[in-house]
Length: 189
Length: 158
Image (cartoon, rainbow over all chains, first blue to last red; front, top):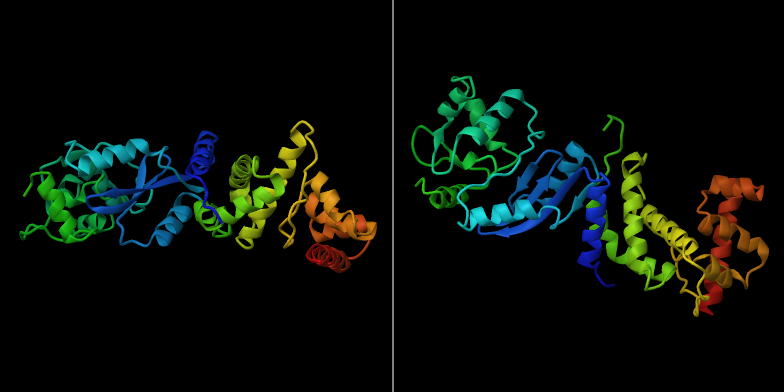
């Protein structure tokens, strides 16, 4: 049996997006950090998964959160693909993509991630305590750490720039090795 | 989504799992030159209906039916063309031909077998509705369709 032509799939995806039939659009992207699965929700990038995360489970979560009309399209997400590739390959200094944090239900965690997204630029790092403080609750450094650990949109919301006050680079959802690569790329190490 | 809505799988997982066989099905029912357009239309029809499905079962069979219906509608909307030169292949019940080809395909059967096949595969009715049209019980309607399919298959295998 012959596989479906990409042109057919892209035509379906474009028409679906045009007609408002897509609850979410995803794309698979090869990067220096390995393969990423990037999901766009109604307002921006809602989910990014590293290649270790099983794709079936990730997409099932997207269907449960955003709706079942989940479609794939490289073309519809060309802007996000280009921005992520340029950033991770060192061709661009900034990664500016709209973000959709509807996967984050806990209000404080959401504030933490918004604060991180809006205030911690490339080349900077903050401690969990400092991030909690900037988010309006200096005592909530553990909650800030949890927010980072469960960040649904790594890279776009730069949780790799949050480090422990005890020194070292600390943990990362995508593994400490990737965190190191990112911080080196950004000149923070 | 409401609390009692079925947990539907991400639509694209169905496309990736069944797309190849659906394209083959579209080739059989619509002909190779129309297959991709028909399948594209079928996927969009399926997407429109998808959030309203009341259960998450038999999704593959559902996609076959949507593809068949899209092929029939595409055929009806086209200006009349020369008749299909070769009758479509027939194998399983999913391989449903279009009205012209379909009639040629079922022509050797008695009318008592042809009518249930038309109701099931051209009009895409469920067995309750077929029963209503045939004036029999749903069980009997199912039996008549299944017997007719078997007869058809045996004829084409012979």
